[in-house]
Image 1: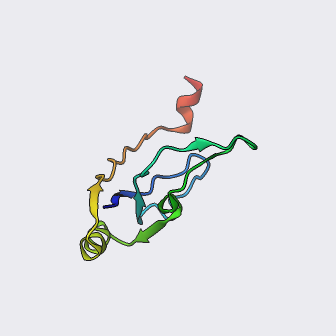
Image 2: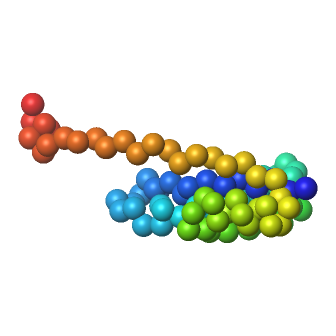
Length: 93
């Protein structure tokens, strides 16, 4: 039985905006450990569910999809957004 992880996409450290951070993403937990390829050294496995990522507008929609498919799921709550308010003049104190 596949186990899905549902989480809200975090903001990338390289982006200044909040594009696509309001979406919820569904990924599957890895079923087997990755093994290094003897020829190239790249990590890989026979688990193809690692390549699947589904996007949903809400957490409820992602949970409903898992329940329709009969998958177990772990819902990771959205992280609390913290604002760091400071003025430009604070750089020169």
